[in-house]
Length: 286
Image (cartoon, rainbow, N blue to C red; front, side):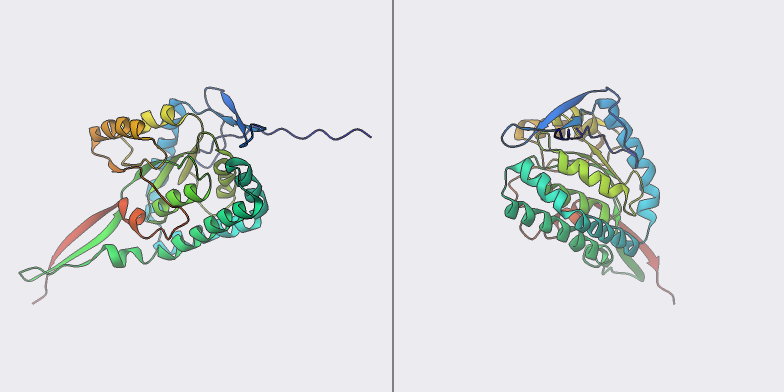
């Protein structure tokens, strides 16, 4: 009996809760750390980037209007779904980053735990980012955090899964929506994560995942007038400078790239980076 032929996989983008092909029809080969073919990934175009922004903006109202407790429940559900597909992600991370199975498993476990960690912050971040302000006068002065809107994120290039989760989770748990550009050379864990997100309770459009050439996709996102903020975790110094210049046109918030230990305690830096502060004055009753 002849050996069975394997089913070759061509991934798709994840935009607006659906899985479209790139409008360009382009794909590129993804290989493991030894150069062995793994799958074909979509080569997203500028049009795909613009479509993803439209989807993220459409989803923003409902997601930002959900209760913090509900957003935390959704993030926890994502962790549950990932736990059930743990072996798949261990294999994909091992191939993508050239890690042993044990080291890849540690990365995946840390990524699952990170969803749970950020889920716990959903209804607590307002306690450290807002509060009552002392004023000289008969007024209450209260500040509260609000999501900034649509955030474009360049995922870390080297940490294909743990780093990816570490830049997505803090953005969406606070109510913003996101367009993510996956690691250029190791996009498969990100594209598989899209399949998990689609079968969790996350509304379509809250997370939109694109793969392809980072610089090609990032340029229209940085210049887009309906993108409110940029996380440049996956950009090199030259690209980051170009994107910051483009982002200045509509005063986007920008988190610059830097050395990061994605396995370390993430703290609250990225939670606070994409929050606006609303302050309300109210006269005291007599």
